[in-house]
Figure (cartoon, rainbow, N blue to C red):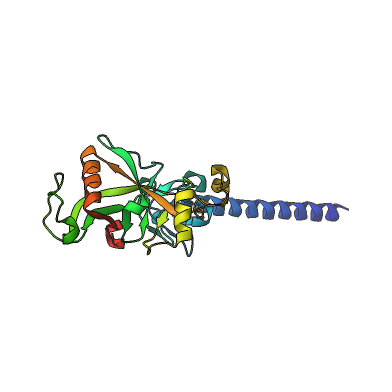
Length: 262
């Protein structure tokens, strides 16, 4: 009887010791992992975040990264970045730095105001996105058409073909239903049906803001792009309006390489 009791005590002691050892090693592993690894937000595989396009759930992932590999100012949870906008292009596997993110809606700076123009009066020359820095110039009408025009007052005419006016930032692109869209591509003159959509609005029922928020920020426009907006000084606004009488105002994206964006 005493041998059985002693054996039972030994067995229980062995099991307790084994459990304690296992728990201790698990605790050490967890502590080591917490000290060596931490969560960080990265651009999801196969994704690229374009400037000033709101970040969606599909754009980012939360991964465990070695502490030594985490950059200062990296975002550590998904909710802190969803809905924000990157001020520059971000590529697959790149950590999201909070200093590169903004909640800004591209509000005018001091001395500026938001001006929107019908897209029929402006010709995009490159693919444009809200937030892009752009060059604006005027492509003149023919010399025959301009022969009775006086010299422009607000800018100097130095070339018979086109004249660079100034640089600005694309602050808004809206369709004919007033819904904001994010990408504007250059295209030829639209068909009469499309022109009707620009002037009279789409026959499709526009989405509510709440519907857009939960479906995807990058919603399809409900009609053709119709308005393009810039934050301009009073002088720039006057220049742009005068330039429209001398020809077609053209807008082109200022190209930035990945090296410059880094």
